[in-house]
Image (tube, rainbow, N blue to C red; front, top):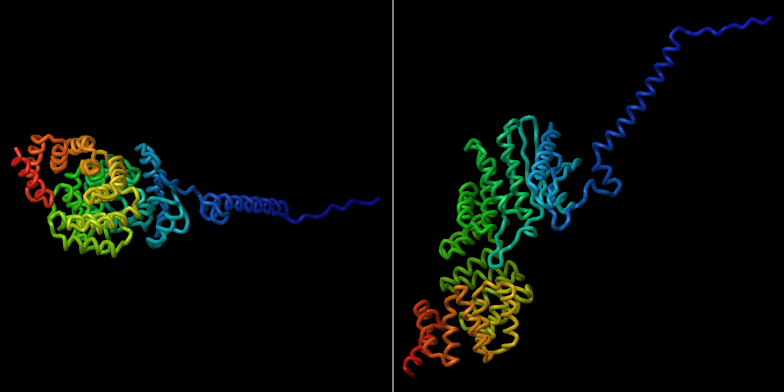
Length: 475
């Protein structure tokens, strides 16, 4: 009988097998955790590797704000805090067509890195910077700028030459962080076209109590500039003037602040103050052709035609495709009596901007004065009125065109429209129209009123005086 001999087991063998199984399970769980963690923490890397982006680029009318990783130590909480705060406040403010996104991985090291990211996603604003245990320094790169800001027809408010905004905020300084968030929201609001809300938010930012010694470091000059810009867009020139002056006080080398303040002085008729501000802007930034065009207009108003010509020529040297420079120089040629040179400049301006209402109006007026191409002049003048129906100058021009075409009844309607819009030198044209219609008393009245208002507006004043004397002598 064969005896079954049992195998002898070494002590602890069962325990070793269990331990091996447990290690295997931990290894599997660890691998799964690494895969999941990698997928969660590195979507940017995965997306780029697969040829996809973590979020969609902005649509043409959309304002996209990207918050990137910050460089330095202990940055995760800082940039995430900025992103979450802005996201929540944008949603609460009900700003339309605004999106805030978080971009992780490969944080920008210099401004051109942030701009490149913004261009890739068609973003309006990229917020990047540095942070550590002591504080944070966010930087704001405006990538889509002039394309989103409306440009006024006659002038052209600018944010060009504005330095990148940055400010160092100590960790734990809640009031300064709140100031930065309000400033950010103010920027977002006006890039989305809500200038009233932009002004309100920027005003709130400036109302945050901070140490006066910290105001310059916190970029108050920049915030005042943006506040002035928002006020100017809403037509509140008085507030804009005050804000730009404050911006200059904090940032005396901000050429755009001088230029925009000059625009307000310009509109108010403070010609010499406008020249002073335009000149300072040119001293700080001699490469912007618009600065020269607007200063040239001021010289033209003062009758300093040589200085005006020099500015227009310099503007065209800097930017040969600036239509407003041709239009204004054409007006100068016209004033000097060189109608052909004026028409040539208006034509060059219209080649660049076929719908420019001022070029159309001025060319129509030049044709009418010369008595040529009257049918084309009528088309030009009517097109200008269609674009800016509240501009009395344009009705005055079309009135002259109708008068030269032998249609005084239509001319009278346009001159009346011009006078209703407070274009007072239309008294001269209406006087000629009344004279043509044989309405002598009305013509005498209009010529007299015109000469009281414009005793030295040559050649019109000379002609009006001759006509008036002839009418009175003939009675």
